[in-house]
Image (cartoon, rainbow, N blue to C red):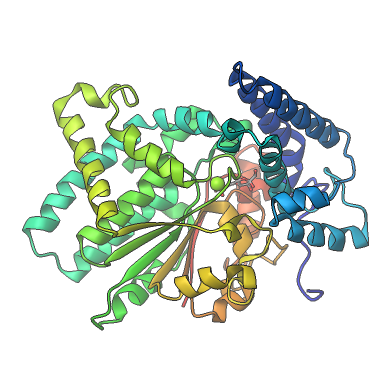
Length: 457
Ligand code: F6P
Ligand code: MG
């Protein structure tokens, strides 16, 4: 590991790690305390109090920049996933004791979500064991996406009729592929953990419309999509085709990913669409299996999207899309996959070699395109290392580049690590971002205003 660049650390004021650990983590934990308290009833309040008290202790240790304590034997017995966290913590501790506000950013962020999950496990109370601290936030924010959801439902209804009644040539399919990838990419522009920062719901709405997406085209700094298209359509054998998506956020982003899946299935470009979800609440908004099922219900629930269901035409479009999703799910053409590897603290280049990912790797090898959505997945792909920003993507993803997996990353940039940029672009963007009135130009990379589409053959 020694010849690799360093990871980003929380005490680097020019890294997005700094505002994340100082401002956003405390807000996320405080909101969590409020939400746990709001769920107290006569049966769960004693165990609930235990969770609140542990969250409060965590908050204090963050604020006081205390040393990060390893998971105990008992905790590991309850959840063996934590063993590797302790091993990694011990490695980082060798150079200097890891504290919350000075330690390695990505590792500690994953650690926090495992800790919170652990608080729930420790109660051994079925209510808290199934409790997602972030569910209310996920649902409330999805509600705000009504306009974007409706626009896409209508677009899909028209498209679906065209695909059913006309023969569509490959060039047209390629244009449509670009369009739906673009929708899925910008669906990642906002995520709920950012709501703890300075992103407003108005900001969220403003990135969900077609017009804005069009304007944002020049904000895609790297676009390897033509190569991914070649990979997907190049193999003319009769073997059935499949696309996998390592999902990121639930709600609107998940919705856009599913619309991409519908297009790929309807157009017969693929036969199976596999989606990979998290098994525990993760980075606030990441998709879990139950979030997928919630979304299916929410789409047709008149009390959820209140405006859509008032007008027949709108209501028809949304019901049509929802029924297609249900249909493909029943036919096993949309397949949900849950694997604990995604919430371990490994870099993704270990997928092909790590025993913990053995089954997952075998499964992903059957895929014709593996799409990694979002910022966190990109950080895990590149190790969240301080790569020079001109480093080629295949180098930054290390052995994953030669693993045989056709990796496509769709990411709006919300953290420091960026690779594959042409020479000079980073310097230009630092100046541009400063000229936009921001004090730290380097924060262009975490502003969510730019994006990259990176592919490894
Ligand atoms: O909390 C900070 C962070 O890790 C950012 O780096 C990242 O933008 C976000 O959480 C998660 O983003 P995404 O949902 O796109 O993976
Ligand atoms: Mg996320």
